[in-house]
Image (cartoon, rainbow, N blue to C red; front, side, top):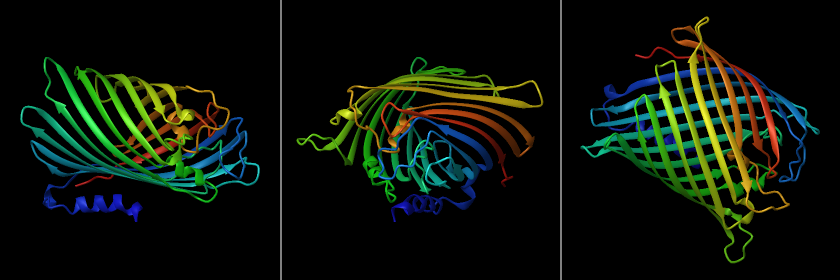
Amino acid sequence: MKRRLGVLALVGALAWSTPAEAQQWGDLVVTFGVSGENYDGNLASVTVPVVDSANDVGAAVGEVGVRGSFWLLNRTNTSVQGSFDLGMRQFLASGFELRDYSPRERSGRGTLQLLHRVGSLGVLRLTGDSWRRAIDDRPPMPLFLQPGYTRYRGTGQFTFRAVDGVTFDLAGDVERADYQTPENYTQIRLLDRDSRGLEVGASWGNEWHVRFFGSFRTVDYPNSSSFDPADPIRHDETLTVGGEWRFSQSAAFRADVGLEGIVNRSNSRRVEYDAFRARALVGVPLPWWGLGVNLYAVVAGKSYVSEIQFARLVPGEEADNASVVYLDLNRALAPNLDASLRFGYTRAETDIGDAYYQRYGTSFFLNYRPRLR
């Protein structure tokens, strides 16, 4: 029943009392892709009862996806926009010790967003998001696939009118995440969480845009123990401060750089850490054959407060500490068809705290945009 709630909410929005002629498509993209990937690491999947990890595995991947956006209401002071992103990836993996795996990943996201201008004070943004992810035949490390889950999040943000060129914003959100628990992976239930967050930010600039922000989040893990008899349920508090800089000279050239520091404290000593994350996105046109290039990089680091000998993590919790690099070459083949060749690298924490795996991959994508009336 829970897995259908996000879809029902989206269908309900489509049936809203907005006149049919007011509904307009913003974009629709159909994507086809194939990939070759290699994973390596000196790993042991200690958090599951059946051990079938390896130092080096490979996978061939085929995927298909469709994403789009549409306006339910688009007026001068009020607008309502919906969007969706659906996809499926099929893996053929080899290199494990006991058997080869054929994991299939299905995912979907639905979003509804209301924008309303509140007189001369500023703009109110209300957003509802739902995610659904399912994994069949999930393999052990080092071929990491985030476990299946259902997530819901509601966000409210108010962006105040600029004063002396500076714009302040205030946002709050609540989120719930429920993870699937396939056979032999019951530890994944430890990831179920309820969270609440508050963020304040200040920004300025147009072509050169700068924003600084600070956020505070509390997270409850109802199925995770703190190992403290006086306070047995795990509760985390996370403080994040950071900034970002954006530059856009044209539709073809853009740059985005961000840096943030994270302090996580908990009533469970094993998950207390300090971390940082730096990211950069650069997109530039090349002077040959209509090519463009995008470079995306994230560098992350984590330092645990306490040295603990046993495993700190359960499968899925490691995804918050990944360093990623993507180099993407793209070219338009037709007015509504483009192709891209992507080279990717990932280094992320394994099921064991402070131990890492690496992923190398090459992908080819075709993106088709049907003509919409």
